[in-house]
Length: 549
Ligand SMILES: [Zn+2]
Image (cartoon, rainbow, N blue to C red; front, side):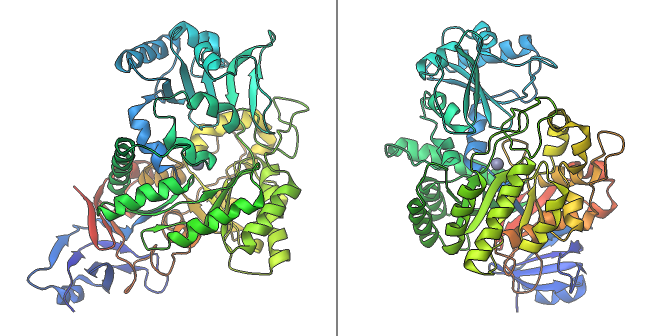
């Protein structure tokens, strides 16, 4: 049979244990026609076949990015990014320049800030922000999207200056004067400020499982569609062919449907239903409706996202023992064990996959206990429930991942970014069980790697490099590195498994969907600390070239 596309002279790493290496791949339509030696694959070349000489570059299954936030990531390009900014003067200059460029914006919104952006041991507050911007509402999101610092104008406009009673795990931090310090922890504390934005913050509503309160105008719809297209082009340029979006609402799926109808959905996207503590279980009917309406190869749902806790940096992660830097404090989980188990049993009963954000070891245990309860109640099924982040795990819980078939979803770039602050929170002794990728892998868990963009850059090659080069940041901590092949699996076939698509994507095998990434060089011959610089030469998704350089 004649191929539409042949990639030859490649070092093909198929992730298919039955046939791990090859030299060339032929593609016909949206599927892989043949995998083998260059000489035999050439037999599929016709006059119209496009033949690409890989020149010895590595060809992999397209990357499966199993945790990111496409909408807020792409929208972020229009916001003030503070990831590289340090110190008051630099921050003030950035804020003022941004304010001048956005004279009509209802909320000056910055992202990516380090908790200690003003210097080691400091904490932002409304007074510092007032000094940078006294007259217009200003809000600064930390890089992890769990804490927002707002100035006095923003707190007043949002009605938070005097504090507010909020559900467990959310907090308007108050100072000795009884007024808000400006630090707002977790979703319900942040939302009133984000709503001040001229956009209404619609790109972030999916983070809270909220649909837009009023239908977007045609212009807003178009703007959102264009933002998503930008985001998709960007992820395709990084070699990504499948995306597990980790926030979501029906609105996002409908926007993506428009992108698909216009022929621009160039990566496969799955979007979860976001279930929150405040929702009655009957709200899961909406999750079922979403799942039923989006069942294609390109756009799908059938996953429920739940936040069990927050983050260690703000003390909102739920720990089994006291924080090292806050004696007597263990963090209050958003879902306690009984409430999560009740939700898990019901979601599982409805046949959906559960994905939880669990950072602290107590949150991880609540998740595992809930999954175990679901198995007891509903019987054994191929549920593939997931736990995201797992920044800290109690050693007793490590074998339970494999026992319960739970996927361990890690973001390699979180370790170098957050490790030092995590250790401040949990203390050096427990640091041995922080970001324990290798320990979970050795215990038989399926480990999936991803970025969590926009919290860190979306770039699988950078993620691979980080996973291969991570060093213990304190003497005596275990080595959590995995071999190259395992890291590549975590970015390809393990992600496909996590998304129930292992029959179609994540491996290079005849008959599977033609989702491929060709690197500019040989990844196995590249020193680990230079992999991020390799570059993506070609991305193919469903037989279509979605990126080429
Ligand atoms: Zn996330």
